[in-house]
Image (cartoon, rainbow, N blue to C red; front, side, top):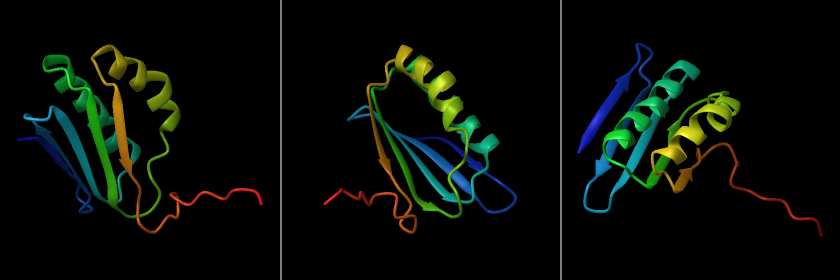
Length: 108
């Protein structure tokens, strides 16, 4: 079920869907997402989870272009404690294909 979609004038978008049978939310991002759009979407998750607790969140950034929004401090300090309070327990994060963020270098 689609809970919401944000579309910006520059063509970027975010879709939030809820898979009721498995009780998980999926945020799918496309294009360039600015901090305001990202924070609004994170708050939309909190609003949904406050009504219907959802322990699982899949954050899919595979369609993003450019840098991921730079409000990580806000996520950690403000959003995460609230998300834990409304029942979030697991987050899966799909990174952008072109960032090499999934490569880990180990010392030899």
